[in-house]
Image (cartoon, rainbow over all chains, first blue to last red; front, side, top):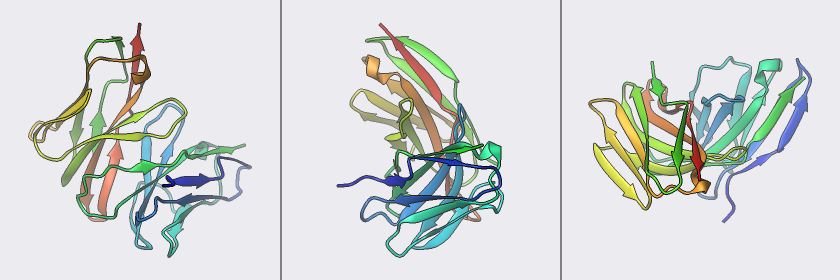
Length: 115
Length: 112
């Protein structure tokens, strides 16, 4: 069974540009979560999608947005890139069950570098 | 708001036992998770607690006290491959639905 896949693995963008990151969840998982992990820092919650809808978002500006497609894959878009957006962006999926005891399965991440 | 505290670093010896503590403050508590993250890799799920008490899974055990906002991860018979960061994560419900917040992680160094 394929795990959570993310693309691209690495992405280099210039300040002010837009970045698009993609995530495919484990088959059967309906929930997708996005986290930002800056160097040396913990995971910061960005967005949660379930059944095609945004269910919750973290304390990030509106230029961080995304969507979930009918096949449950997801896109994270970051507009007007800033240098401090440089980080590892992790996508995770889980069964979309409230109060589930299942932890997240993470993808290997996209390393975004803004220059 | 939510807050999760765990030690930044710990060092232990191969074969020993180590306890990694986590304290949290949250409303709408809905479960506590522990993850392991090796350098340069994605976190992997270790354990889940939602009721008070100890959950044992092989060499790893996790404990929760909801009244104290406290959890610990216990690693027995330490191996060199256990050198990694251990992340405490708390799921809670808020007006926006469920949200899982991660602590900054505890870097564990296992020495021979």
